[in-house]
View (cartoon, rainbow, N blue to C red):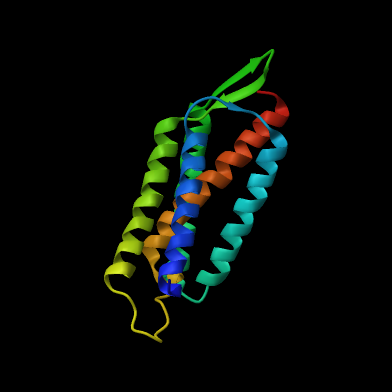
Length: 165
C-alpha cells in the first residue's frame, strides 16, 4: 500500500467516526456535563485558532472564515433559544434542535466529500505538493459557520448549565 492509499485508509474511518459522534450529539436528550463541555470548548477554540493561523496568509480565505464564524454564532444563539432544558431527579439535560445541528453537519460533510472527490479525481502529479487546504474561501466559510456554531453553542450550554438548567 502506497502513502497515497494509506492516508485515506487511515483518515476516512476517523472522519466517519467523528461525524457519527457529532450527529449523536445533535439528536436527542444530552446529559449536562460541564467538565466535558469545558474540554470540548477548549478543543474547538484550539482548532479554530490553528485554522486561523494557517489561513492568515490567504486574506480572502481568512475573511470567509471570519464571516462564517459570525454566521455560526448567530445560528448558535438561535439554537440555544430552541434548546429544551430539563431538570430531573436523574440530573440536568438539554435537547439541542436537531434540524440546526444536522443541517450544519451535512453542510460540513458535503464540503469534505466534495474536496476529497476533487482531490481523488485530479490527483497532483508525483512530487507536486497537494493543493493548500486553507486557500479555499468556500471551505473556510463552511468551516467558520460550523466552528462558530459549535463554539458559541457549547459556551452557551456551559453557561446555562452553571446557572442551572
